Every structure is written in C-alpha cells, then in structure tokens.
Amino acid sequence: MGKPNLQPSTHFAVPVRQPMPDAVKPQAKPYLVLFVVLASAIFLYLQVFVLLATPRVALGDQSIYLHSAARMYEGQVIYRDYDHFTLPGTDVLYLVLFKLFGIRAWIPQAMLVLAGALSAWLSIVITSKVMSGPVVFLPGFLFLTLPFTSYLDATHHLYNVLAATAALAVVIEERTPTRLAWAGALWGLGTCFAQSLVLGPAAFALFLVWEHSRKKETSRSLLKKEGYLWVSYLASIAAFNAYFVWKVGLKQFLYYTVTFVVRYFSTYEIGTWRTYMIGWPSLHNWANWPDLPAWPLIHFLLPLVYVLFFVRYWREGRLPAQQRWERLMLINITGLCLFLTIASAPSWNRLYTVSLPAMIMLAWFLTFPFTLERLMLRTLWAVILVLAIARPIVTQARWKAFLDLPTGRTAFFEPAVYQETKWLMERTSPSDYFFGDQLLCFDLRLRNPSRVPYITPFAFTRPEEVLNVMQALETREVHFLSWYPGLDDPSATEGNNLAPLRRYLHGHYHVAERFANGHMIWERNRAQVSSR
Image 1 (cartoon, rainbow, N blue to C red):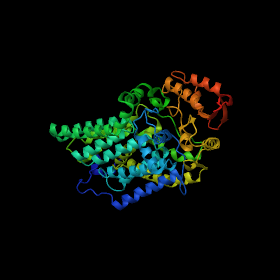
Image 2: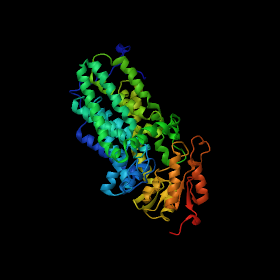
Image 3: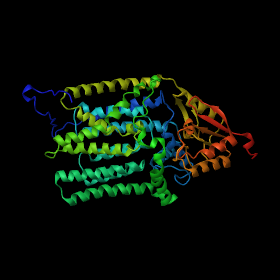
C-alpha cells in the first residue's frame, strides 16, 4: 500500500498494528453512541420524508411485499391465495405493522429510518470490538451515506441482512452457549425473510471449527457449540413457518420456496450473474449525483476486501491466538457469507444491502500506519461530511408533487409515476380490481384478482400463472390493468409465456393512456363488460 510512517532505523520492519488488550480497550461513550444513532435517524428521515412528515412513494421491490401484506390483511394466505418465492417474513412484518397502524404509506419509510439507525448502532457495537477511537463510527456513517441511501428500498434484503448483522453483534465478543443460541435464532429469523441466508449459519459453523482448531478445544466443546447454533436456527425457522405449512401443506410450501427458486429464478433477467456491473446511476438527473460514489466503491470492495483480509491473516495472524484475529475473522466470514447469498445475481442494489461488513473491514485496513491509508481515511471522512449535508438538501429541494392517496398523503419525485398514479386514482375507488402494478395496488388500495403480483417475459412467469391472470381478468371483469415496457422486450423470447395474454388483451382491452416512462394503462372494452 502506501509508504509506512516509520523511523529510519526500522525502515525494513513490517509495520504491524498492536491493539490495546481487550480488557482495557476504550469503548465508545454511551452518550456519543446515542447521539450518532439519533443523528443517523434524522439524516435518514430527511431522505424518506418531505418536511414536515410526508413520506415519499415506496418505489422498488418493497411495493411487492407491501401489496402482499395488504392481501394478507384482507384475509389471504401466501402460497395458498397468491404466489411468491421468498419465505413469508417480510409479508408478516408488514402485516403486523398494518394491524397496528393501518395500511399507510409512511410505514415502509419509517422502517427504513429504523433499520438504518439500527444498522449504525450494530456497526458501532461490532467495530468497537476490533478498533478504537473515532474510526469505530466510520463504517456506519459510510454505509448510511453511500450504499444505504442510494437504495432506499425496505424489501426482504434489508431485513435479512439486519438480522445477520445482529447475529454477528451478539457473538463478536464471545461464543457462549446463550450467545450462540441467540445468534442461531437471529440467523433463522433472517432466513425467514430470504432463504439464501441459510449460508449464514453454515459459514458460522465453519468459523467455529476454525476457532476450535486455533484454540485447541475439545471435540465435545465444539459439538456443543454447533448444537446450540443449529438447534436454535432450525427451531426459529420451524416456529415461524409452521402456520403457513399447516395452511397450504408442506408440498406447496416447498414448491414455492425451494423448487420454484431452483428451477426458474435464474431465468429472470435480474436473477443471473449478468447483472454485475450494470446500473450506473444516471448523470442526466442532478438528484442522482450523490449516488455516484457508492457504485464504484461497492463494486471495488466486494468481495476484494474479504480476500485481502485472508491474505493479511496468512501473513500475520496465524501466530499466537488473539481475540483481535478471531473477531476479525468472524466479521470477514460473515461478510463473505452475505456476499455469497447474492453472488448468483450480484446486481448493484443487492451488493449495496450486504456491504456493511465490507465497510468494517475497510475501516480496519485504513487504520494501519501508512501514508496512503491515512489519506484514504481522511478522504472518506470528507465524503461522509459532504454527503451528510448534500443528500437531505437534494431530497428536500428536488422536484416533487403530492397526492392524497387512500394510504395517506404521499410525495412523488418522478413525474411519470405521479401522473400514472393520479390518472388511475381519478378513475378508480379503493377495493376495485386492478392488475399489473403492485405499487398502484398498494397506494390506491386496489385488489389484485390474480395469484401473481406482476408478470415477466421470462420463464419465471409460468404458463399456469398467465392462464390464472386471464381467467381472473375475465371473471372479475377487471376494468384497468398496467403494462410496462419490459414486457415487450424483443430479446425475451426463450421461456416467454405471455403470448396468450397479449392475444386476450387485444381482443378485450384497448390502450387508454401512455405515460412518459413507457407504462400503458389498458382499459376493458365496453362490449366486454356485462350488464350486471
């Protein structure tokens, strides 16, 4: 890296950072931690709410889960009444919140504030076990100002990574039976949001084997630790999903959560490795400029920082056992595990959600006494300061429009989304049937007549699902449906099952409106509406 800051007499020495013993390592002051967490919450609030308290519209994948939770709120059951491929954790979380507060537009935005503030706090807890001084705040600040606020989407990835981070915080200091049981339960809870997190306890189990070898513990001790981990992990998954298995049957449950994912998720364009290095923020919109640093930083860090740690450990950490190396190894393995959970489809947004451990490892690397590391450390602090000021200003000052929706007053930052929502709101009432856009269904409290929240031009959308959509449109005489440009992608030929639906639309519907983002609203022909 850079030139070491050493005296001439030690010019040829290998500079190794010597941390203070754990027993006397200073911890961050509680009042300072509280201040940082509150400041983080305020910073995030200014990203997702327009002053004083108007939430921004919940774009992205979060709308799928919000709409699904609204269906559960109305009495439907996942896998029985509607299809989805993840475990029901996100649906259940939003269902509970809807039961408490009603179906409101502010809920996902409030969850972003809460999840971000918790991430900042957990980052401090973890980092303070391997570092000291102001640098313990760096990973959390870096995570919030760059990747987190570049992808404000309260989807399943947010919650499963939060559970994994909490599990790491529980066991970072020591691996007692109680802590292992809690970690296993948290890993299990995270898996209930996204089943790919099964890699988490598997990676942690390997860490326990490595630690057992390093400390030369007895085999019985290792088996006991593994038992606490796996029993609590499996028990939490079983307890959380038992109701849904009972309602739909084990075969149906496993089809959607295992079989369907294995067979068809990779047929979706966003479900393959080709998503890597795609999605650079557009330069045409000045409001996107604060997002620009996150994209190269995260793509450069993941998974390089984890590999570099293994190299450094091979050189320096294999000697006498030190808690510093054990804790760093645990952070590194957890981060690598989170990366592997999304490695088969490493789109920029998925990389962003799993990047917090990489931020911690980066901060650790930058505490070494080299000129380049010191320069990079100061640069990152400067970036954090600039973004902490710029992002709220951009959010509050950019173009926006407001609508009083059935889910509450909501702010729109994209004119096309605002126009589409306004157009449909003026022509529908809550509880009307509508298909094709789960965000519109959630915002306007419309009912989806089919089993699927949306369709794709890939084998991910099955022929039986297309048939179900057509039958639902016909049976319910659905007046409006939405069609997005990707459904007409000329390159999407293999596995495209939408031809029957296209023929049905041309025979029963006509295009009522086109919007600037390419979306179309199809309206049912009057001749196709029954007299009832």
